[in-house]
Image (cartoon, rainbow, N blue to C red; front, side, top):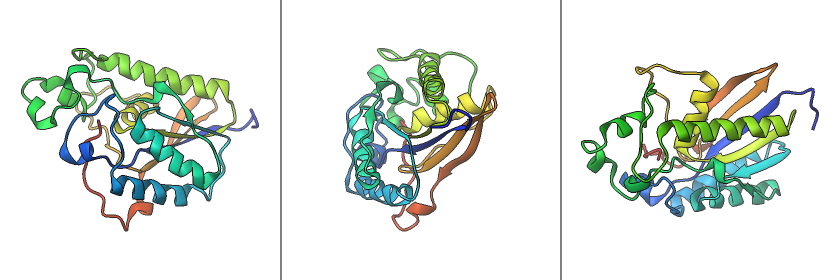
Length: 217
């Protein structure tokens, strides 16, 4: 690693799960990939094995860890589990259908898509600000401890949107934070004292697998 270089991150959302398709909030639930999710992970692995990485971290939840192990096999790298890369802990909302919660927790559901300024408590889980702070602190710690590194991450849709907010500095109630697809790839770097987004939600590698809209959390 060369500390004089930019610190560059490549981040992959985990492959599809059954809960993604059925609209069930996962949060910290330990849900496995389905067959399409495993195929997506293999396709992402083929795309990424053309590149070189110094470090490889993954959320320790099963859907991310399985995705990371499939990618790691292609790259001949062992992913290091990092709990701070987990999805938003949604407490009592986990395991419940998204549509069922729209009236009961409207602000939480709205915050899945939009940037808002108010903190949002989640019964039995993390507040929105606690979640965003966890992700931002993890990202900053990785770049401070590994200047000049090329770092690969496997994580979650909500976590990636927290990354987007941290990098873009978005604080606008009208802003729709883009949702990354399963096994989509995003890239960002720390350059001369500031974060820069290089790409968001690359999907060309998934063209042959028939992506469907799926719930980010």
